[in-house]
Length: 194
Figure 1 (tube, rainbow, N blue to C red):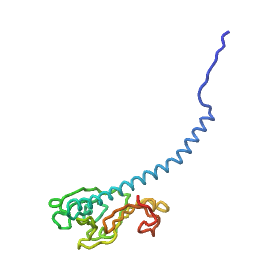
Figure 2 (cartoon, rainbow, N blue to C red):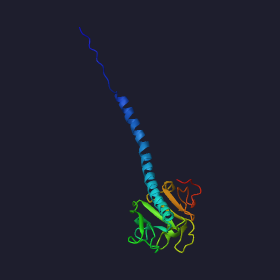
Figure 3 (cartoon, rainbow, N blue to C red):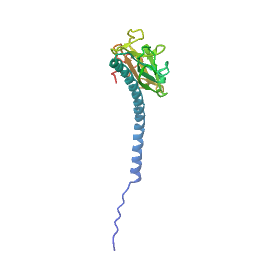
Figure 4 (cartoon, rainbow, N blue to C red):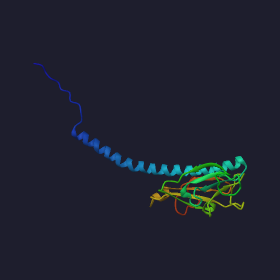
């Protein structure tokens, strides 16, 4: 008589249940972390886009030896996007036909709110760099420190400051991005720059 040897390979019901439980726990931990990562990446990406536009204006001003500006696309609201241009006709306003357009940026996503200070909040709003790369106002004086506060409009509570970026423009023309640590951290002194 011949003996049959069966080799059974697979999982027991208990092993399968333990595996499913471990996967569920890992998913419960990973999904919120991934969401936070994605939200942070979107905010950082947008802030860096605005930072590079401001730096492009400063660089073009120094390269061409003429004033360069960043202004809202619609002339009044930074949430409409912005235009970076070299002010060839010296009118201190954007003209597509007489000024050199460096770049244009479309409106930011609706979940981002932008508030500004300095000449960026003037009527009409603007950022102006002279041929030496200094931030100036339209009268030729130093405007003082200016800032863009970019915040996710859907962030509340303890997430509010983690979901905020501040772009600071010094009169010297230096531009930096930081994350404020509290509502009273207006200059981002408690924060390292990003």
